[in-house]
Length: 93
Image 1 (tube, helix red, strand yellow):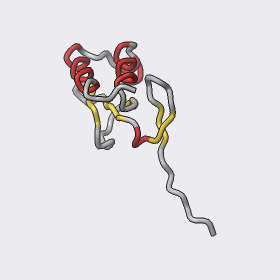
Image 2 (cartoon, helix red, strand yellow):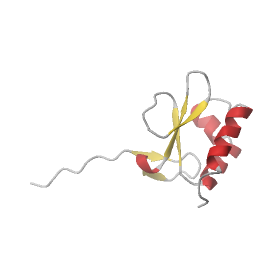
Image 3 (cartoon, helix red, strand yellow):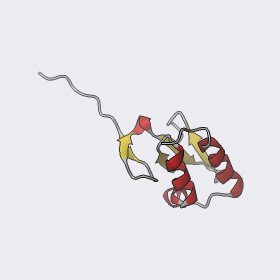
Image 4 (spheres, helix red, strand yellow):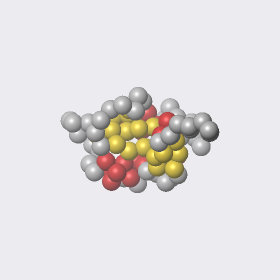
């Protein structure tokens, strides 16, 4: 009998469209108050999107409004700036 392998959820980065393990991506969630929040625990509920943990994908996701489209919302100026600030701490690819 072969041992069972654990299922690892796959998700797609909204910027580069690469499919990766869910744990290898950063989860963003649209909260009830309409802001987009980085979910490092991957446990928040709500409409979500995933981005690779590198600055290039974050720049594409924010600049080309791919997050807006995936989350079905319009990022406000303060929220957009908070996400840009978070992305500036990430490494370049």
